[in-house]
Image (cartoon, rainbow, N blue to C red; front, side, top):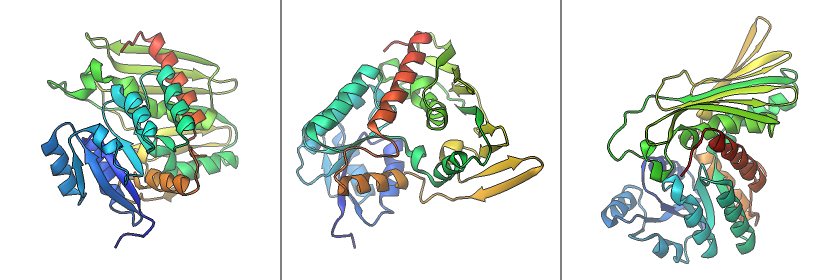
Length: 324
């Protein structure tokens, strides 16, 4: 039995991420998957049946105009995020938009302006910001448990087969390592150390112009971050935050860590924090809280946070000569 104050979700872009997000929404008593949309009607119906969703549309505009939908989760390819988010906001819908929110800083600004103009909640779907391990690690860093932070090391890497029509290698859809997965290690550096003073980046590029692997150094006044994103190499995908009195390591894969360890001298202290569902539940809960409090942004991942991260990504995009 659903809660009387249920928040009704619409979902567009019915691929892998949308399936994972939808399965987590089913775990929340106050969430209902109320409508889904795909340009392929059969795909929309199949997705709706899978998650007991009452409405399936074959156009995004039709879903935008559904008066019963409260918030729309946008999980389409990167290149469409900006226009679809703005259109949803114009139609009076709250929006949770998959990362990266856009392929340019200019579009990111337009999206935030639309949220403010229409007084509707908007958040970039950086689910990692809300998982318990990351929340607790940030608290311990702020308490000075490992002293002053001097280094962040993180990567997001895996080997991907280039398949015909595959989104990762499709330049038209905003493919490549930086925008698809590089935003994760950049996000971690940002939430720990803030805006860097200098950015250095180098890439291995595909013949079509996308980056296959990008290494980044972010220089701060008294710290550095060494980060990498790759779709052509494997990794243990642990993240290490080092300070003057010890270091913290997030379990692999760090962006959805089920725990972490603190190392001080010869001592290792382990902390286990299993995620609820796949971990998307926490960002959905944050959306619900903000909407009920009439907020147009989250204090944990604010409009300003998204804009500042977008500006960092834009600088790297320019340095490696990535054009969409």
